[in-house]
Amino acid sequence: MQTLKQQLVLLRDDYALLKGYIRSLLGTNSPDQQNLVELEKELMSGSLVVEKKDFPADAVCLNSDVTVEDKKSGKKIRFKLVLPAQANLKLGRISVFAPIGMALIGYRKGNLVKWRMPGGEKELLILNVLHAPA
Image 1 (cartoon, rainbow, N blue to C red):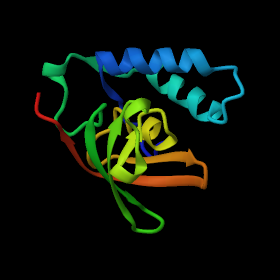
Image 2 (cartoon, one colour; image 1 turned 90 degrees about the vertical axis):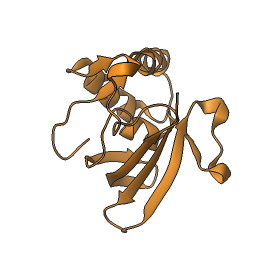
Image 3 (cartoon, helix red, strand yellow; image 1 turned 30 degrees about the vertical axis):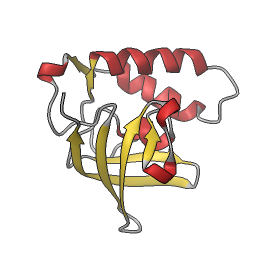
Image 4 (tube, rainbow, N blue to C red; image 1 turned 120 degrees about the vertical axis):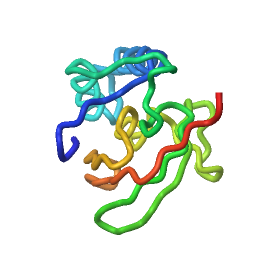
């Protein structure tokens, strides 16, 4: 999935949400089965789960504004990572459970991440991460 082995850093609430989502869809006809399996492996293999006060400012979490660069095309994409009910591509809001959301959550600015998207495998560089004020 990612180019270099990097540890995921997740907020405790985000971790619980992801685990529940994965459990509910594994073994179903979801088109994202392979991504779900890979994300589950990453969550189980040494993810650092922390409270909000200990969360790094440059790590991707729910409600982060994220800027990535597609390494193949050079295109920069900016979006907010949200829950599915808040997702709206026209407003730049992408679901945490969309392939790009599952690919990036828990990674940090400067990480290079590979993930299977509907259009094929993408290699994304995380350029910037901003969190909404608490």
